Image (cartoon, rainbow, N blue to C red; front, side, top):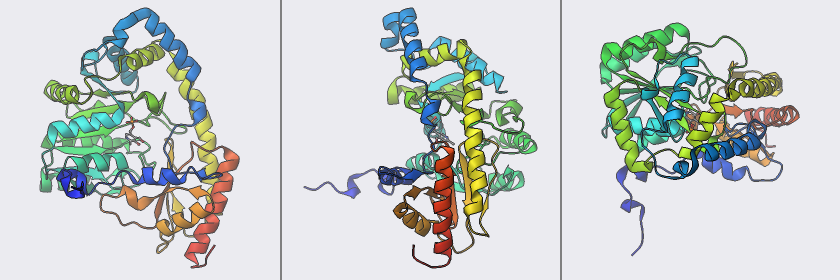
Length: 400
Ligand SMILES: Cc1ncc(COP(=O)(O)O)c(C=O)c1O
């Protein structure tokens, strides 16, 4: 007997894994300049601090951190995470916090709790690849909400809600992945109002919020939500460490929180206690503010270097000017295929993610996402210069 594709569950058959993971395989090539990933810079990670805190929490809590724990989470972490999120304007108490294995898991648990096969989920277009994959795995029908330079267009969202009556809407309001765009204040209020008017849960995915380099912070959508329709999903991946796989969801609807807890029980029982205790100690010692100041200072310089280096791109290319986060989004002149540019760019040792991957229905062949956090300034300039040349040559139909 042979194992065939037909043996897979239907919802896994057409899913081949994130395009980014395929692109990552190419990045191992020596000398490759990568604008492809979305990782924090290596210098943002603090192995000595984490090692010291690990020793401290193990000395304090002993073997209990190595034992099974409650799915709802480690009490002290729920308290400190709630306080941290309140500092960002999120309405929550410790009892509303579910520690999760990264923001990804919070969204997965929401899908698991709410979505039946064929249910419509509204999402931005383009949107986060991991979220597209998760929605597909639950057989959701993805319907895009039109967006502009200020994020989701509220009137369009309302029309789609009336048409499809969805249970769930997925929004990345701050320094969106992949575009870097931030949802305007009035729209945040309006989306919260739509959620309670129509009874739609909004999954507010906000892992980049505190990576702000210019401009004023805006309150989360969740802060305008009186009734508990907005689930706020935060993560320590981009702030402290993606490898520790720790995030916090603030879920003010107790029924929904209970279902998410039940959904988590069967997946991983609970998020690792040791990591919850380490991040709890990190927050209680007040290390976050200085850390964010340092990494935002570095990222600001890298972002500016990338924005300046668009001077290497040919006329007719446009790009976003994000106030934070890890990505810049570019649109090439109409008719220039970013997949073709990608193939040629990889030959020239520079990589990015073609924008088409971020659209649930593909298309938008002339778009691309560029990450700046993994490269220093000279590398950013060199990579953008190479890329600009490849784009110009691809646009002219010349070979490199
Ligand atoms: C918008 C968005 N949401 C969620 C995640 C997942 O992050 P994690 O599961 O590590 O918290 C990412 C990671 O790139 C992201 O860009």
